[in-house]
Image (cartoon, rainbow, N blue to C red; front, side, top):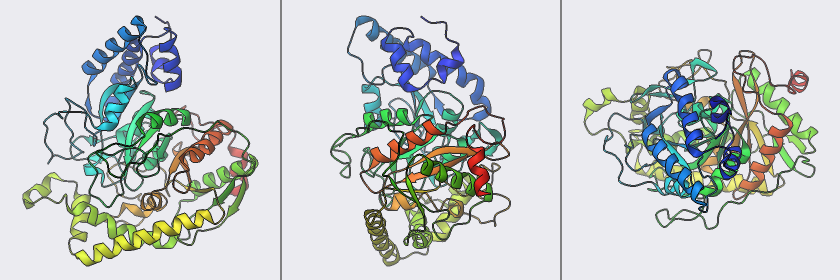
Length: 484
């Protein structure tokens, strides 16, 4: 139907794809084929898929094209290609969760969130790669190998929504489903220079509900905040299979560019975290950018920040103890770091775990009360470091540890513990050309505000996807210089 180059089609926003399909300028088959062609050219190097279902995607695209030609009522994502992290079930495809110890049997039915995407007209491309059981925010998997960062293939793409963020950064389709237990949507978004949003807990139903202390959320990964909002609107709403799911569907706010009246707290380290200087400078510059957009920005450290590290480490290993193998021989098939994490937690008593859950309840209350005391948004780095070489749990210039990757991810898990919305959006690149994300977070139920502010920031300071060009996107250098 169109002469638009295939690579251009593959990298279009979801909104643009929907408009082209509805106006019959581009067919769903053309869109899906363009994305598949781009995947075919790039994924051998990136390794973002646990299972690509090209045949199924094209069959669904042909059915979507027939619906357009018949004049059927079209859903909000009609013809738009979407990838699914390999932790949510897709009918006919296995759900391996990054582990060689899981079954290769295909799922009998879609997870509710996948069914909602299909009902909205989305075309499922397949299952994206992840580290084993999502235990770490890196992109090494014993099942699928390493997923590589499109900006530098020797570096991690982050995790645990590794393949999702890598595909988004590479322009291989506009929408990618991730999950987030301690930053697993926002951290790969930070490493890959894309948008990753973790909504208020329960906004998107998670079925079956994970038995991990109510840490895991489902959220969108995209290049564009408006696309993330569109995907979230489709996925949100209550479901009988998730007793924690919230009533009501997500509705975005009208875009705004003037942030006058917005009360923003900016914390460089939450009072305790180590942060690499280049990351710190770029995030500080981004905070100045919000101030120049009209927001009232105050630099401070929230009082609850310092209690996070001990709390998450008490809970994280306990959450993964249930996945420890019953046969010690299976340990050889597992991620060594995960085994070390499980072994470190093996001595925890039921009383200690229960006490940690009690401290978590108090921590969440402290976060919510602090926001209510005068701030709409909290700004922090999305992570302490830019992407570093594959095969490592920490960068070379950080102290080594056999499992504790959380040392460079101290900014993300607080909002899993507090069930609050948080987003990572790109705010620049290091001198080596690696992306850095700024995290915007708010109290529970202000998802629309967090997304609205993130959208305003990216419109004011757009991020360049010209991979290989060192330094910052246009418009950031002068502000960064003021912080150095």
